Image (cartoon, rainbow over all chains, first blue to last red; front, top):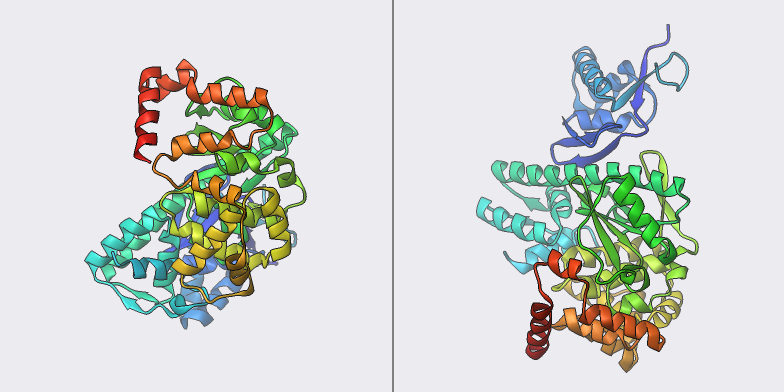
Length: 98
Length: 360
């Protein structure tokens, strides 16, 4: 089974800050602060990517266990998907889920 | 606040003595820096300097800087969300436009858009579409015009901009770069020839071509704010760094637009205040010899009575008797709605003009 993949919503706006990244999802002018290391996840979401791939990249960057990071990454992606800043893509395509 | 620290922040990362800024600030110094940096719109560059380790601050100051920057950035994102809505409306209505100043520069010439703070949106539209574009922002986007025209028809013929407030964001719809004789000397049709674009939420938004862009940042730096804002000088340096505009092309355009003095002053102030290493362009600007008339036009922006010296100098560049009379009438006797919006009467308007001109 192909792992679920995520990417930034193309209509999201954002600015990096000292403490992370400020994200403004489409359809609103309200911004949300995503704290570090969530800003690193955000920067990696410029192309479709899976939780596993993100966790592996972060584990290497922060020298931490992949399993622990995988759980945190999934929580963050769920939050970003819920506010519409990130899209969950259909299997093997770059189309978002309905 | 030490001016050298502020200039160092404004020049952070550019080639020159400030490239390797290395300063530790206590909490009081950071409070003072934040006040001045906000005034000069430099918060984004303060953040860059802190992130790069060029400015070292304590934990509380670090949080204060981050909060101030995030608060501005939230406003910037709100403005850009509105911008996307407005450009959609302009394009649907078939109105040509160019985004310039804040958001355009943030996304086209700065290393990171977070370095370039801005408070409002600046959109240039052709003169003949000026009223239609203003009406569209007011009626379709539920904006509120902040100040009536001096007299009906003035903005479309002579004005610099109309200011419209949409929700909490100010939208400046421009027909030229600056009020007064320099704004009236710019060949407005040339601003829509060619151009680049910035990508915003996957949308291509048109911006000015490099030479008009360079002249615009020079106009803003030299005569836009009094005293000069350091961020405006940084804009000049960033446009030079990104586009390497050709001196010959700039000179031809600036001469035609009566902006040679302005370009010389902007480049001179940028290199002097940010202490940049001399380049071919800065040496060229230094060697320029603007005519006396161009110098006279620029001086009209730099006096304490500029609200009146600019209109007076404008009469020297407006062609034709009819347009001059219409301009003069609007300046001397603005419509009642305009005066009322400013809390003035006709008598007070006249007294104020005389007082300011006497103080020159």
